[in-house]
Amino acid sequence: MASRLIYTTDKGLYCEKGDFYIDPWRPVERAIVTHAHSDHARWGSRQYLCAEPGAKILRHRIGADAQIESVAYAKKLTLNDTTVSFHPAGHILGSSQIRVEHKGEVWVVSGDYKLDADPTCEPYEPVKCHTFITESTFGLPIYTWQTNEELFSDINAWWEKNKREGKTSLLLAYALGKAQRLLKGVDTSIGPIYTHGAVESLNQVYLQSGIALPETIRLSSMPRGTKFAGALVLAPPSAYATPWQRQLNPVSAAFASGWMRVRGIRRRRSLDKGFPVSDHCDWPSLLKAVHLTGAENVLVTHGYSQILVRYLQEQGLNADALSTQYEGEEETTSSENAAAEEGATNEGSSNEDSENGSADEVQE
Ligand SMILES: [Zn+2]
Ligand SMILES: [Zn+2]
Image 1 (tube, helix red, strand yellow):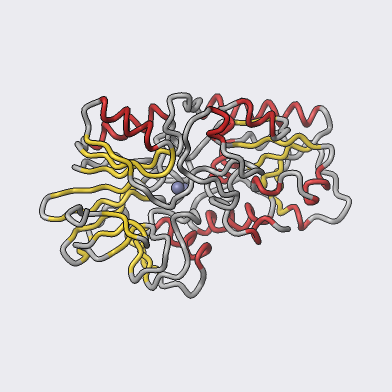
Image 2: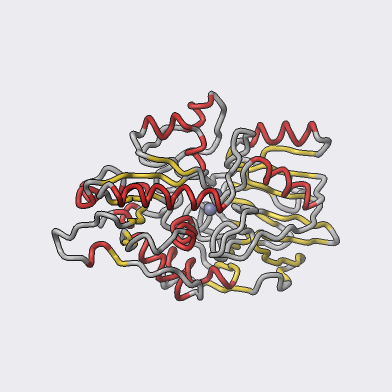
C-alpha cells in the first residue's frame, strides 16, 4: 500500500509524499479538510487547511482556537513533494474535492459531493485524474433523486396543505447544508419560517459567508404560548418527537433525506411525510462523476462500496473498496440501518449525530 500516493492509516487518509492527511479521524499534524460535517472535520489536529468559502463554517464547527488556513478554489499549493488544490464538490458551502499531484500522477479525493444544482454552494466541478477516491453513500441503483423543481413543488404543496388545516409544518433536515438549501428553495410567500437553534446558528454562518438566505426567526426567541400554525419550522432530525416538538402542535413532521427514497423507512418512523433529497450523489450521478474524471482507478469509501466497486469493475475499471471511518447520511431519529430495509449491505454506520454535530446542538 505504501507505494500508493494516498492510503489509509489508523489516523485517516494519508499522503506520504506531501505529509498530510485528508479528513483524518484522529488528531494529526496537518489536516486537509474537504468539508465541515463532523465525520470529515474532527477536533484536535494541529493545523487545518480548507477551501476559503468554507473557512467560517469550519471555524464554527471545530472552535475558535483551531489553527485554520484557507485557500481559494483551484489555487495550487506546494506541500513537500506534491501539488495540492481544492475544487468545488457541490455538497455544502465550501465543500471540496482535493486534487493531489506527484510527478505527473494525479489523485482526487471527492469528500462528499453531489452533481445537482444547489444555490447555497459552488457547483461540483469534474477534475481529471488517474485515481479517484469516491464516496458511495447512495451507491445503489434504487437511489435516484427528483429534480429541484419537483422537490420544492412537493414541499410547498405539503406546507400549504398543513397551513389550510391549521397545522405547523416541521421540516427535519441536517442543520449544516441541507437546511440552508431547503430554506433557499421554499416559497417564502406561504408563511413565516422559524428555526431550531442548531439550524439558526448555521444560517448565521452562511450569511456571514456571503450566502443570501430568506428571513428566519429563531423559535426560542418567541414568547411562550406563541402559535405556529401555518408556519414552516426547520429543525435537525434529532429534534423529532422530543419535548421541544410539542410546542408546535398540531404539527405535520417531514424528514428531508435521501433515505426517504425507501418508503418503508418513513412509515416505520411514523413521520407524516418524507422528501427524498440528499446532498450526496444518487446512483446515476456517481457513475457520471466517475466517468467525468477519466480515472482508470477508483477507490470507493463510505456507503454501498462493494456494490459500486463490482459495477465499476464490470465496466472495465480498476475499482476497489477503501475502508474509512466516514459516515453516511443520517437516518432520522433511529440508529436502525436503512440497509436492512433493502436487505443490502451498508458498511457505513448510521450515527444520529454524524452530520448535525454534537448533541448540544439539538438541545434547545
Ligand atoms: Zn458531508
Ligand atoms: Zn461523509
